[in-house]
Length: 291
Image (cartoon, rainbow, N blue to C red; front, side, top):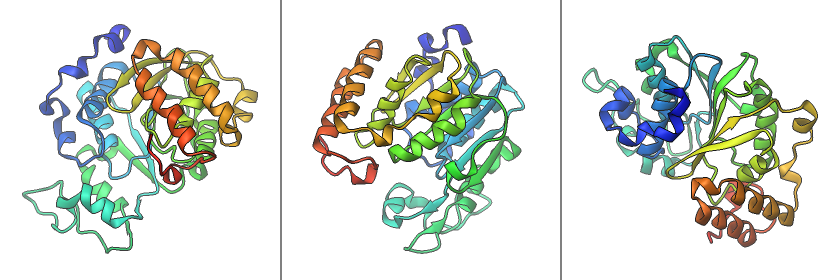
Protein backbone atom coordinates (compact mmCIF):
# COMPACT_ATOMS: atom_id res chain seq x y z
CA UNK A 1 0.00 0.00 0.00
CA UNK A 2 2.76 2.46 0.91
CA UNK A 3 4.59 2.06 -2.41
CA UNK A 4 1.67 3.46 -4.44
CA UNK A 5 -0.05 5.44 -1.72
CA UNK A 6 0.14 8.87 -3.34
CA UNK A 7 -0.67 7.62 -6.84
CA UNK A 8 -3.69 5.59 -5.70
CA UNK A 9 -5.25 8.45 -3.69
CA UNK A 10 -7.51 6.10 -1.79
CA UNK A 11 -8.78 8.99 0.34
CA UNK A 12 -10.65 10.33 -2.70
CA UNK A 13 -13.13 7.47 -2.25
CA UNK A 14 -13.66 8.04 1.47
CA UNK A 15 -17.07 8.74 2.95
CA UNK A 16 -17.64 10.38 6.35
CA UNK A 17 -17.91 6.88 7.82
CA UNK A 18 -14.26 6.24 6.93
CA UNK A 19 -13.26 9.06 9.27
CA UNK A 20 -14.78 7.26 12.24
CA UNK A 21 -15.31 9.50 15.30
CA UNK A 22 -12.99 12.13 13.76
CA UNK A 23 -15.88 13.09 11.46
CA UNK A 24 -17.63 14.60 14.50
CA UNK A 25 -14.78 16.91 15.50
CA UNK A 26 -15.19 20.52 14.31
CA UNK A 27 -12.41 21.66 12.04
CA UNK A 28 -11.42 24.20 9.40
CA UNK A 29 -10.09 21.40 7.20
CA UNK A 30 -11.83 20.45 3.97
CA UNK A 31 -13.25 16.91 3.89
CA UNK A 32 -10.58 15.90 1.36
CA UNK A 33 -7.91 16.99 3.83
CA UNK A 34 -9.52 15.12 6.71
CA UNK A 35 -9.71 11.95 4.62
CA UNK A 36 -6.09 12.34 3.54
CA UNK A 37 -4.89 12.65 7.14
CA UNK A 38 -6.69 9.46 8.14
CA UNK A 39 -5.29 7.60 5.13
CA UNK A 40 -1.78 9.02 5.64
CA UNK A 41 -1.39 7.69 9.17
CA UNK A 42 -3.32 4.50 8.48
CA UNK A 43 -1.76 3.42 5.18
CA UNK A 44 1.47 5.38 4.76
CA UNK A 45 2.91 5.66 8.25
CA UNK A 46 4.54 2.55 9.67
CA UNK A 47 5.65 3.70 13.11
CA UNK A 48 9.15 4.59 11.90
CA UNK A 49 8.95 7.87 13.81
CA UNK A 50 6.58 10.20 15.62
CA UNK A 51 3.53 11.97 14.19
CA UNK A 52 3.71 15.71 14.89
CA UNK A 53 0.89 18.19 14.24
CA UNK A 54 2.03 21.82 14.38
CA UNK A 55 -1.09 23.98 14.68
CA UNK A 56 -3.78 21.71 16.12
CA UNK A 57 -6.19 24.50 17.18
CA UNK A 58 -9.39 22.77 18.40
CA UNK A 59 -8.11 19.32 17.45
CA UNK A 60 -9.64 18.55 14.06
CA UNK A 61 -6.36 17.61 12.39
CA UNK A 62 -5.01 15.70 15.39
CA UNK A 63 -8.25 13.70 15.53
CA UNK A 64 -7.89 12.59 11.91
CA UNK A 65 -4.22 11.71 12.35
CA UNK A 66 -4.96 9.73 15.51
CA UNK A 67 -7.93 7.99 13.90
CA UNK A 68 -5.70 6.72 11.09
CA UNK A 69 -3.29 5.30 13.66
CA UNK A 70 -6.19 3.67 15.53
CA UNK A 71 -7.58 2.12 12.35
CA UNK A 72 -4.13 0.72 11.58
CA UNK A 73 -3.92 -0.79 15.05
CA UNK A 74 -0.56 0.80 15.81
CA UNK A 75 0.65 2.14 19.15
CA UNK A 76 1.74 5.58 17.95
CA UNK A 77 1.08 8.95 19.60
CA UNK A 78 0.07 12.12 17.74
CA UNK A 79 1.82 15.14 19.25
CA UNK A 80 -0.33 18.24 18.79
CA UNK A 81 1.14 21.73 19.23
CA UNK A 82 -0.73 25.01 19.50
CA UNK A 83 -1.12 28.13 21.61
CA UNK A 84 -4.66 26.82 22.23
CA UNK A 85 -6.03 30.31 22.62
CA UNK A 86 -8.93 32.06 20.93
CA UNK A 87 -7.90 35.62 20.22
CA UNK A 88 -10.81 36.51 17.94
CA UNK A 89 -13.96 35.21 19.57
CA UNK A 90 -16.28 36.28 16.74
CA UNK A 91 -14.30 34.41 14.12
CA UNK A 92 -14.24 31.35 16.37
CA UNK A 93 -17.99 31.55 16.99
CA UNK A 94 -18.77 31.64 13.27
CA UNK A 95 -16.83 28.42 12.71
CA UNK A 96 -17.72 26.64 15.96
CA UNK A 97 -21.13 28.16 16.64
CA UNK A 98 -22.78 24.98 17.90
CA UNK A 99 -20.06 24.53 20.53
CA UNK A 100 -20.14 28.04 21.99
CA UNK A 101 -23.29 27.93 24.06
CA UNK A 102 -24.15 24.28 24.69
CA UNK A 103 -22.79 22.53 27.77
CA UNK A 104 -21.52 18.98 27.27
CA UNK A 105 -23.89 16.12 27.95
CA UNK A 106 -23.72 12.35 28.11
CA UNK A 107 -25.82 12.20 24.94
CA UNK A 108 -23.38 14.49 23.09
CA UNK A 109 -19.90 13.55 24.37
CA UNK A 110 -18.10 15.60 21.71
CA UNK A 111 -19.67 18.90 22.70
CA UNK A 112 -17.30 21.34 24.32
CA UNK A 113 -18.00 23.37 27.45
CA UNK A 114 -19.17 26.91 26.77
CA UNK A 115 -16.46 29.41 25.89
CA UNK A 116 -15.33 31.76 28.61
CA UNK A 117 -16.19 35.10 27.06
CA UNK A 118 -15.84 37.50 24.15
CA UNK A 119 -12.26 38.52 24.91
CA UNK A 120 -10.54 35.22 24.28
CA UNK A 121 -10.42 31.86 26.01
CA UNK A 122 -8.19 28.95 26.80
CA UNK A 123 -8.93 26.47 24.04
CA UNK A 124 -7.01 23.57 25.57
CA UNK A 125 -9.88 22.16 27.72
CA UNK A 126 -12.15 22.28 24.67
CA UNK A 127 -9.60 20.50 22.48
CA UNK A 128 -9.04 17.89 25.19
CA UNK A 129 -12.77 17.19 25.33
CA UNK A 130 -13.02 16.87 21.56
CA UNK A 131 -10.04 14.51 21.50
CA UNK A 132 -11.06 12.33 24.45
CA UNK A 133 -12.05 9.36 22.20
CA UNK A 134 -8.36 8.80 21.36
CA UNK A 135 -7.16 8.93 24.95
CA UNK A 136 -3.39 8.55 25.23
CA UNK A 137 -3.12 8.38 21.45
CA UNK A 138 -2.88 12.18 21.41
CA UNK A 139 -0.53 14.36 23.44
CA UNK A 140 -1.19 18.11 23.35
CA UNK A 141 1.50 20.74 23.98
CA UNK A 142 0.38 24.28 24.72
CA UNK A 143 2.53 27.31 23.95
CA UNK A 144 4.67 28.86 21.24
CA UNK A 145 5.83 26.00 19.05
CA UNK A 146 9.28 27.46 18.49
CA UNK A 147 9.74 27.79 22.27
CA UNK A 148 8.64 24.21 23.04
CA UNK A 149 10.71 22.49 20.36
CA UNK A 150 11.06 18.75 19.92
CA UNK A 151 13.08 16.12 21.78
CA UNK A 152 11.13 13.03 20.78
CA UNK A 153 13.46 11.44 18.25
CA UNK A 154 12.64 10.67 14.62
CA UNK A 155 9.53 12.17 12.99
CA UNK A 156 7.70 10.15 10.35
CA UNK A 157 4.82 12.56 9.64
CA UNK A 158 5.15 16.30 10.21
CA UNK A 159 2.08 18.48 9.61
CA UNK A 160 2.87 22.19 9.44
CA UNK A 161 -0.22 24.36 9.87
CA UNK A 162 1.25 27.16 11.96
CA UNK A 163 3.48 29.07 9.53
CA UNK A 164 1.57 32.31 9.98
CA UNK A 165 4.73 34.40 9.68
CA UNK A 166 7.87 33.77 7.67
CA UNK A 167 10.01 34.12 10.80
CA UNK A 168 8.15 31.49 12.84
CA UNK A 169 8.19 29.13 9.85
CA UNK A 170 11.97 29.46 9.62
CA UNK A 171 12.29 28.72 13.34
CA UNK A 172 9.96 25.72 13.30
CA UNK A 173 11.71 24.18 10.31
CA UNK A 174 15.10 24.59 12.00
CA UNK A 175 13.75 22.77 15.07
CA UNK A 176 11.80 19.93 13.49
CA UNK A 177 13.41 19.17 10.11
CA UNK A 178 16.60 17.68 11.67
CA UNK A 179 14.43 14.85 13.02
CA UNK A 180 13.00 13.78 9.67
CA UNK A 181 13.94 10.38 8.26
CA UNK A 182 15.40 10.48 4.72
CA UNK A 183 13.36 8.45 2.26
CA UNK A 184 10.56 7.95 4.77
CA UNK A 185 9.23 11.15 6.33
CA UNK A 186 6.36 13.16 4.90
CA UNK A 187 5.99 16.89 5.54
CA UNK A 188 2.46 18.19 5.01
CA UNK A 189 2.47 21.90 4.25
CA UNK A 190 -1.18 22.54 5.03
CA UNK A 191 -1.21 26.17 3.83
CA UNK A 192 1.19 25.78 0.92
CA UNK A 193 -1.20 27.43 -1.56
CA UNK A 194 -2.89 29.90 0.79
CA UNK A 195 -2.49 33.39 -0.68
CA UNK A 196 -1.57 34.98 2.66
CA UNK A 197 1.40 32.66 3.30
CA UNK A 198 3.57 32.58 0.16
CA UNK A 199 6.75 32.05 2.19
CA UNK A 200 5.89 28.37 2.64
CA UNK A 201 6.34 27.67 -1.07
CA UNK A 202 9.47 29.83 -1.02
CA UNK A 203 11.06 27.78 1.74
CA UNK A 204 10.27 24.52 -0.04
CA UNK A 205 11.83 25.97 -3.20
CA UNK A 206 15.01 26.80 -1.30
CA UNK A 207 15.03 23.22 0.06
CA UNK A 208 13.90 21.51 -3.15
CA UNK A 209 17.13 19.51 -3.26
CA UNK A 210 15.95 17.73 -0.11
CA UNK A 211 12.17 17.52 -0.54
CA UNK A 212 10.07 16.09 -3.35
CA UNK A 213 6.42 17.20 -3.80
CA UNK A 214 4.24 14.09 -3.88
CA UNK A 215 0.60 15.16 -3.68
CA UNK A 216 -1.78 18.12 -3.64
CA UNK A 217 -4.92 17.72 -1.57
CA UNK A 218 -7.74 20.19 -2.11
CA UNK A 219 -7.66 23.05 -1.16
CA UNK A 220 -4.26 24.34 -0.10
CA UNK A 221 -2.30 21.34 1.12
CA UNK A 222 0.83 19.99 -0.57
CA UNK A 223 2.88 17.13 0.88
CA UNK A 224 6.58 16.50 0.43
CA UNK A 225 8.74 13.41 0.79
CA UNK A 226 12.00 14.07 2.62
CA UNK A 227 14.55 12.71 0.13
CA UNK A 228 17.91 13.14 1.82
CA UNK A 229 19.45 14.60 4.93
CA UNK A 230 19.55 18.35 5.26
CA UNK A 231 22.99 19.62 6.24
CA UNK A 232 23.00 21.54 9.51
CA UNK A 233 24.56 24.57 7.83
CA UNK A 234 21.68 24.78 5.32
CA UNK A 235 19.12 24.82 8.11
CA UNK A 236 21.15 27.31 10.12
CA UNK A 237 21.21 29.68 7.16
CA UNK A 238 17.50 29.39 6.42
CA UNK A 239 16.10 32.93 6.40
CA UNK A 240 13.06 33.34 4.18
CA UNK A 241 11.89 36.11 6.50
CA UNK A 242 14.87 38.22 5.49
CA UNK A 243 14.40 37.92 1.73
CA UNK A 244 13.45 40.81 -0.49
CA UNK A 245 10.26 40.58 -2.54
CA UNK A 246 12.18 40.05 -5.76
CA UNK A 247 13.99 37.04 -4.34
CA UNK A 248 10.74 35.63 -3.00
CA UNK A 249 9.06 35.95 -6.39
CA UNK A 250 12.02 34.28 -8.09
CA UNK A 251 11.78 31.30 -5.71
CA UNK A 252 8.02 31.08 -6.27
CA UNK A 253 8.63 30.90 -10.01
CA UNK A 254 11.15 28.12 -9.42
CA UNK A 255 8.67 26.22 -7.26
CA UNK A 256 5.96 26.68 -9.89
CA UNK A 257 8.11 24.54 -12.19
CA UNK A 258 8.89 21.98 -9.48
CA UNK A 259 5.20 21.34 -8.75
CA UNK A 260 4.03 21.27 -12.37
CA UNK A 261 3.12 17.56 -12.13
CA UNK A 262 0.61 18.48 -9.41
CA UNK A 263 -1.29 20.80 -11.81
CA UNK A 264 -1.46 23.78 -9.48
CA UNK A 265 -0.14 26.44 -11.86
CA UNK A 266 -3.07 28.79 -11.25
CA UNK A 267 -2.58 28.67 -7.49
CA UNK A 268 1.15 29.28 -7.84
CA UNK A 269 0.49 32.30 -10.04
CA UNK A 270 -1.82 33.60 -7.33
CA UNK A 271 0.97 33.33 -4.75
CA UNK A 272 3.23 35.43 -6.97
CA UNK A 273 0.46 37.97 -7.49
CA UNK A 274 -0.16 38.07 -3.73
CA UNK A 275 3.44 39.06 -3.01
CA UNK A 276 3.22 41.83 -5.61
CA UNK A 277 -0.09 43.06 -4.14
CA UNK A 278 1.24 43.06 -0.56
CA UNK A 279 4.84 44.28 -0.82
CA UNK A 280 7.17 43.71 2.09
CA UNK A 281 4.72 41.73 4.22
CA UNK A 282 5.89 38.63 6.07
CA UNK A 283 2.91 37.95 8.35
CA UNK A 284 -0.40 36.46 7.18
CA UNK A 285 -2.58 38.97 9.01
CA UNK A 286 -0.86 41.81 7.16
CA UNK A 287 -1.88 40.52 3.74
CA UNK A 288 -4.88 42.70 3.00
CA UNK A 289 -5.13 42.68 -0.81
CA UNK A 290 -6.18 39.37 -2.31
CA UNK A 291 -5.14 39.15 -5.98
